[in-house]
Amino acid sequence: MPHSRLTSARAIVDSAQALYADDHAALRTLTRLATRIDEPLRVAIVGSVKAGKSTLLNGLLGERIAPTDARECTRIVTWYHYGNAPSVRGTLTTGTVQTVPARRQSSRLELDLGGLTAEDFERIDVTWPAPGVRDITLIDTPGTESLSHDVANQTAEFLAHEDGVAGADAVIYLLRSLHESDVRYLQEINARTRYGTARMGTIAVLSRADEVGSSRLTAMISINDVVDRLRKHPDLASMCDAIVPVSGLMGMGAASLRQADFVVFRDLADRDPKTTEHLLLSAEHFIASKESWLPNEQTRIDLVDRFGMYGIRIAFAAIRGGTADAESLATELTRRSGLEELRRLIDVNFSQRQSELKAHAVVLAVNELLRRTPKPGSAELLARTDEHLTNAQAFTEMQVVGRIAARGYALPLEALTELERLLGGQGTADHVRLGLAADDHASHQMRDVAIAHLRRWRAFAADPLLDRTTHRACKAAERSCEEIIERWILRTALPSNAS
Image 1 (tube, rainbow, N blue to C red):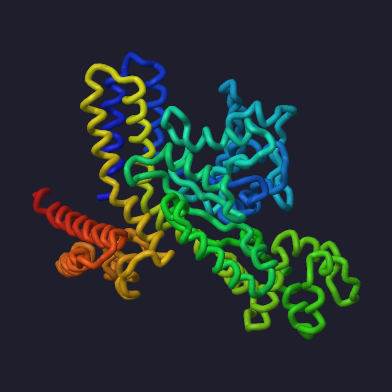
Image 2: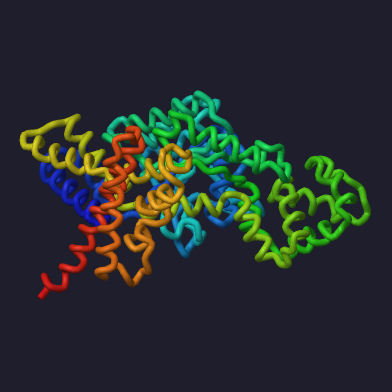
């Protein structure tokens, strides 16, 4: 069962606390790790300056909260938690925690640091009733290529601290294109959080994807070509579970689309396309045009600021294609932005595997502590952490599923589709993996279907003509089938054991 990973992690932390009972520094670390097991999954958003981190964050939050300009607070690691009562608190480097006054502006949350600078803060915690953080904690980090070396290094230290305690369980890494600096940064995170095949969960996002195709309606063709190349990049394939293109600005605009916005879009889209075509040449032209039938200049500035030219073009096309109301238009813009697919990947790769991801981060930190400051009796506990970390089927599944998208396996399309489903690429529940209804989870049909899948993938793996990479994928499917059967046996045995 997935929760057994957290049970194992909790038992390891308990044993470590007993072992280090006379070491106050170690106990502080272990107490933090024990608390972390019960906290929501931590997902950090990472990327270079101007990669679109805050814009994407707002899209995921479902609300324009995070500041998108280069103000002082964007240089501080900022945590976004779900809560009914909004609040903002800052933790200073001295350990003092204080309330940070905040005002809600039209495009962001305006924070008043009270004369302090980013260097005075260790972190800021924003609690907000935003739907995007109901089940996870999103963490906005300073740019990895900040002009300030200290600020850039703060993100690296947060993600993969030298003491082995990673600040996040998973990462969304933003790429505007693939630079060598991105590869190096991902390699550093990967090296510090990897143990065998297990590592921090990572989704790469080609951010500001509409800019790849100059915001034209045909931009998606260019975007897909770039994403295909990224998925086949050997370095990224070994460090990222998935790669997805996202137009964060359009996604963020869709989340805040109002009926008044739809009316403006509809009135413009109702014009002869030849009349409006010249308006869409550029943002400058759209805003500066003087035609009397246009909405006022401030309205057009607001549309460009919230949707971007790509979003405006897509809105026109959708309405001309039959989209008849604000809700339908918001849904279409969200889908086209890539934000819907990113949310799906976060759910499948992160949320549904949060037990494995949290347990990995916690146990890896204990493992590092044991190796760094060994004590009499620590060898046995170290062996337990090694055993836990080596059992990494969930991480193998994520890596294989990511490679399927890059068409990296020599298998028929039907087999690839089944492989993705079996390894949890469409959801990690056992009935979803097997393509069954939810109420079949304890039926004999589930066992029989799982056994049939097991035999089929054993046969695939036995093919002597398979290349090594495809053989490993088949063995991963075989192991996933075995685990489904093991879980079925445990579920069906529970009533008789109880009696």
